[in-house]
Length: 192
Image 1 (spheres, rainbow, N blue to C red):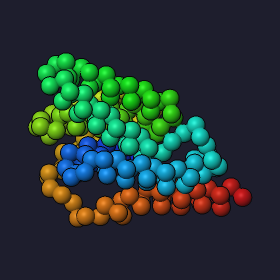
Image 2 (cartoon, one colour):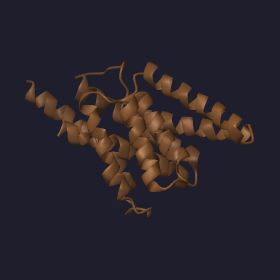
Image 3 (cartoon, rainbow, N blue to C red):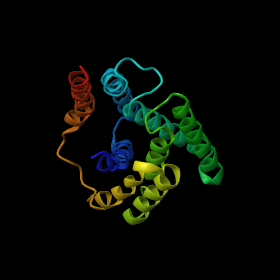
């Protein structure tokens, strides 16, 4: 089950990039991610560490950093009036935020920040090219042990039809801290 679960992170990175592209208010989107990162932190800590652990941050925190990276990229790209200079300066900002995610102990750190960025910058490309590039990025950056299974996310990503889903946004925001809370409770019950 852990191997199958490795497919989730690239799919969620795609969803973060898509949400950033299509949202009407990027700042509000960042605030929502940050809020749910805070809400998710205690359940995450108790599920994985058995108590409060300041050395690791949950994936919602990482996704919030990824949105900060996209905002920085867009700002710097526009400030440089596009072109190669804008791309280089923007990519350096994304890399810096990716490194910050490592220092902060963010779950999936640089890999998730970079993957969201790859999905974002290749948004105009054919789905096959975009998804293949993203999966190749993940394979290059995090090709160890169980994480190798993440490359299989290419197949469900190719099934995306470009249409908006059913509007279950709140459910999916609540699902992450909720399932972490359930895991923490199960851990406490089973280790008594």
